[in-house]
Amino acid sequence: MQTIQSIDELEDLYDEASPTSLTKVANRMTPLYQKWIEASRFLILTTVGPEGTDASPRGDDGQVVHITDDRTLLLPDWQGNNRLDSLRNIVRDGRISLLFMVPGSNNVVRINGSAKLTADSELTCRFDKKGRRPKTVIIARIDEMYFQCAKALMRSNLWHAGDESATVPTAGQFIREVKDDFDAETYDSGYAAYAEPKMW
Image 1 (tube, helix red, strand yellow):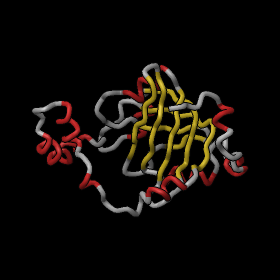
Image 2 (tube, one colour):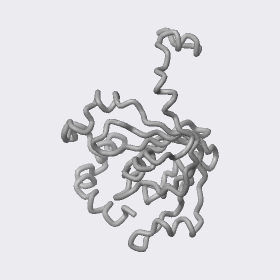
Image 3 (cartoon, one colour):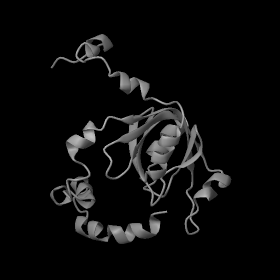
């Protein structure tokens, strides 16, 4: 199989970028982008580190990030599995990207920038939920933001396809695939109850 070895070789395969795809880029939060971000309850955080890249879904029951100014977002690190892949990467290499989604919209808003991590109580207490706080908060700086072309979500029919989960493996089955004696059925049937007190 022949692989592409240069940027020139790559660019020769494609037409020029559409002018709008270049002029739509903002270097800070605009009023309309703020409206979108405030409506988003779900994002994908991507980071990079010595071991490679990482992508992590992040969600909340309301606004997924807090906006502090037109260049800064705060993303709480709510309780998860404690692998800390994204957080380790941020400590060692601050480059990040964020993809914000709003159910029903085929647009995706993308932010590229940098991040730092803090456990400062002044910031963690902003996210208090029923007496619980995140252990850390990601402070994200916006270098550029723009809306992503809608074609990917249009092709996938993501918001209108309905529940297709009956035909795919469960989390318990994924674990049993690498650990033969794992009780996948009990894990799957009990996970919602297990997760409920650990959501925040």
